[in-house]
Image (cartoon, rainbow, N blue to C red; front, side, top):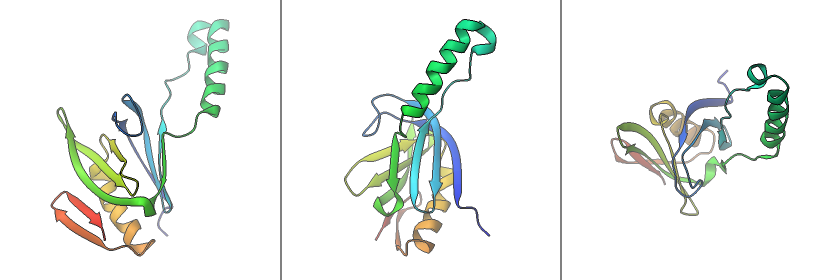
Length: 137
């Protein structure tokens, strides 16, 4: 049995979904693509009572915050490999509404999985544009 989700660590680059670079994880399920922000480790043990208060406030903020990218896989129109400075492993995903999400360190891990899920689970046809880019037909 194949797993129902995959995760890759990376950073969401500035663009349609975020005004700044945000560290986090891309989670790909059979139905959705979700990018959640990664929070730094807790500081409670290092700062004593003050650290505990900061941790509580931080946990409350985490619960209230929604994922930055949460889109159905059916909305994906194109996937390509991008580059940002020295990083050449950028996953660039285009959606039906024209928005793009660029996630670092994710192309090699998620390219084949996106193809497989879109063809097998959603019945989509993949059209190869170039060696590192394709469109959903």
